[in-house]
Image 1 (cartoon, one colour):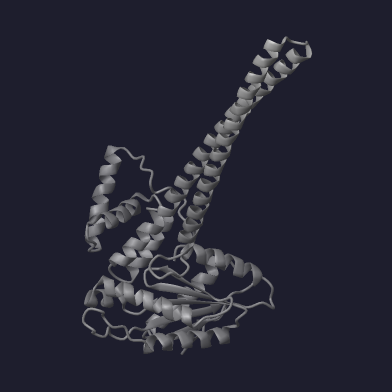
Image 2 (cartoon, one colour; image 1 turned 120 degrees about the vertical axis):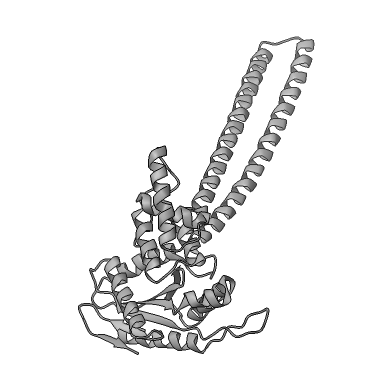
Length: 358
C-alpha cells in the first residue's frame, strides 16, 4: 500500500557521475537479486529505489516484491504511479497553452484599444476643426478623413471580434482537454475503475463523514489469488483480461454510494459508506462467490482460463483513527485470508485480535 503520493520529483537527477555510477551498480545488483528483466521500466524503478529518492516508491516496491517476482503489469503500474506521470505533463501543456492564449488575447485587445484611442483623438481633433468654421474644401477633406477613420474603426472591430471568437473556440478546446485529463487522473486505464488517487480522495471524504460514532464505514481490500501463475501460464494479455473481468464483477455487485477502485497490480478496494461490519461481510462473500463462479475464455482458442478466486480483508472505520491505520487493518485482514488458504473473506474489527473467516 502506498499511503501518500511521492514527496520528491522522480524526474530530477542531480547526483554527480561517481554517485550515479554507484547507483547504477546497486540497481543492477537489485535487478539480479530479484530476477527482474533489465528493461527500462524495471531499471528506473530499481535506480530510484537504491538511490532512496522516493520513500513511497520504496515501500510500494517492497510490498509488491513480498508476494514474489514483480510482474510486468505491476512494474508498469508502479512506474506510472511514481516515475512517469503523463497526466502531470499533460496538465502542464494545457497550462502553457492557456497562458500563451491569454497573452495573445491581451496583446490583441491592447492593440485594438490603442487604435481606438488614436481614432478617438483624431475624430476629436476634426470636430474641433469644424467648430472653427472651415471652408467648403476643408469640410470636404474632413468628411473624407472621417469616412476613412470610420472604416478603419469598423475593420479593427471586426478583427477584434474574429480574434475573440477564435480565442473562445481555443479556450473551449482547452477546457475539453482539461476535462479529459481530469478524468485520466482519476480513472484506471486498464479497468475503467477509479484509480488509487481517486480512491484516496473518496476515502478522505468518507472518513470525514464517518467521524460520528453513529455513522458506519467499512472497507474491503481484494487481491486476486495466485495472479502470477495466471501470467506465467496464459501470458500477460490474459492477465490483463482477468484484472478487467474482476473489476467488472466488482462494479456489477456494488451500488449506491459504494466505491470500487483498482489500487494497483491485482489489488482492488471497495468502500462501503453507511455499512456496518456484518453487512460488509455479506457483501464480501457475494463478491468472492461471484468471482469464483465466473469463467474467462481466451478469444483465440476458446480455452477456459483456470478458476479465478480472490482473497478479501474487511474492517470498519473507527472515528478518529487515521486513514493509514484504517487501511492497514484491512490489509492485515487480507493477509489473514491468504494465510488461511485464500479464496475466503476475513473480518478484522478494531482492537480485536480474533478474526472471522467465511
